[in-house]
Length: 244
Length: 375
Image 1: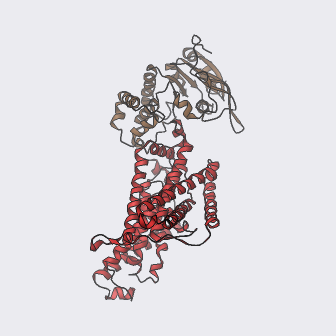
Image 2: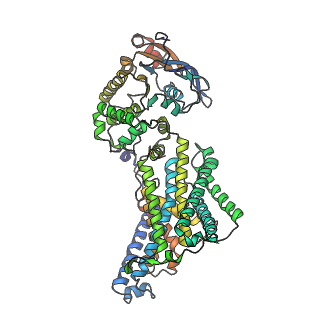
């Protein structure tokens, strides 16, 4: 595994196994995300990508292994414990609270924070980033277009002031032009110093902006390399499509 | 767009035709009843139509009408308060808590015990406002505790089970609370102390004289509603409740404690039912262990009439139901010559429910949900 000059990983998975009932989903998964980097986890359908995210966030209990945040084992801690300490997720398909207004969605992102001034500051930051969101603050978020909803979903995640942002399939269900915008937004957030852990099916797109990546196949990490090397790796396609 | 695609063309069955017939028949009944009423009022009861329909029909005077309207509204606002609890729990957990009527009964019962104690101490007559405040507080606290315990003991272990299971459990909880009450306090009706005379006096200008206790009921219910609206729409707790109602997984991703929010929902619904309980005591003056049943079912109907899950709808549904069960016997049934129309209050209430389900199944204020949004 890439070691960044002996720095401590921000978020780590050590030998994680996760089961749903009798079904073995994740098998001995090791991952480490370092502060400020942009990494991606690639894999086809049912390879265990979403389970990896849920396990990281404590929404699914692993059957063995450790989830480590800043060197502290956080298995069994509630999701709120991780959110409070800077781990936030943008879920697949955005999953906004459709009946709530855009502003309420953003405020819920900052649910665990009590620093009124800091929250207002971050709201302004989100408005700067997504001027269109500001125009629709009092609209119910379900009435927004897909692209606008994506902005609100990212804005909502940023309101928690994350140190690492977990992105579940950011290209899923979006028009190609929007996927491009979306990846630009991810880079923009990354440039502000937020580490990004992106889970994707679209390998070329993800690797074009990531530093490093892993390939997950039926719950096992089969490739672990820098983005450039993964792109050049002839095994990538094979393992990824389950042909290997 | 998706709705149009999903709407499959289905041949009309005999059931569909029967339902259409019911829709028209009920609408015709209401329209014709109101027409007969207007004829009776404005042409006078001695015209052939009125005499043909009902030989004993009389003109309804303003005083009687006002009396019916005000009792309808005061009872309706009570139904509305209880309906909120059904609606909120449905919004958050997606099942109907049939034991919610018993929470209301616990409110009425503990309110009764408190008021009788205060009556013996002389506070009830000497300082009624203080007494009623204490009674409201005690019954609200007891009803809230009942609702919270109910969630903790009976429903939380069933989280994640199919929705039919907590529903059936709630019927069991309902029987349990009824019988516990009979065991602890003895079965049968118990009387509230008499309200002080100054409260029972009619008030207002001559053309609009209303019994003081009815004014009190409507004012207290309105205040409770306003407080609830503020809590749900304007506070962080309310925002968390609405978020949990919509998507529990994402709500917990925001750091919201879903279990605690569900408890809060039960507690608030319980508090509203507790207030409604003491209002029942003020309106009717007597409570039995079965008091929770009929008002509970009617409040549930009110929640459905207003659009379940919608808080404004619960209130509107309560007022609609209370108003119609009080007015419809005189306005529609009597001019039509239905015998025993004064006994048909309950039938009217449930006919309103059936009618709304036939014409607008989502309820008055219910939003049409797409299949993916339906819990």
